[in-house]
Length: 121
Image 1 (cartoon, rainbow, N blue to C red):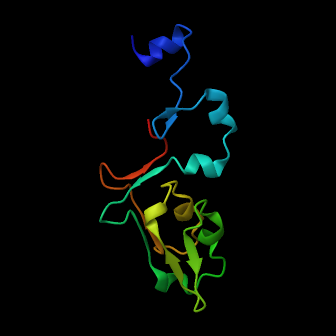
Image 2 (image 1 turned 60 degrees about the vertical axis):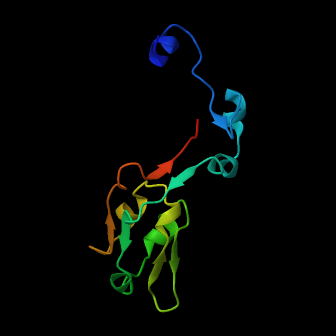
């Protein structure tokens, strides 16, 4: 019987696990964000899936990517450029959508097998 069939038949879906230990459903829901993020696995590819052209960022008056990124991976420098660290990226694309300078951020999906795994089972 598949997991979908189990759920339709009234069986509860399997609870997530952290470090090999099963977390009760209610506990998982109530778990603080920082604790959930501790379970995230980042599989880092050699090729970055986001590239920031810091030269184009110099003229940006809003630097919306800095405040929009939920992982706080964009850091403004004193000379108006942006430093970016893709290794801890959630791959949400918010920076790409928030950026108002055309071509400053190039976003693509990570190479197959790489990227963020939100839950380990």
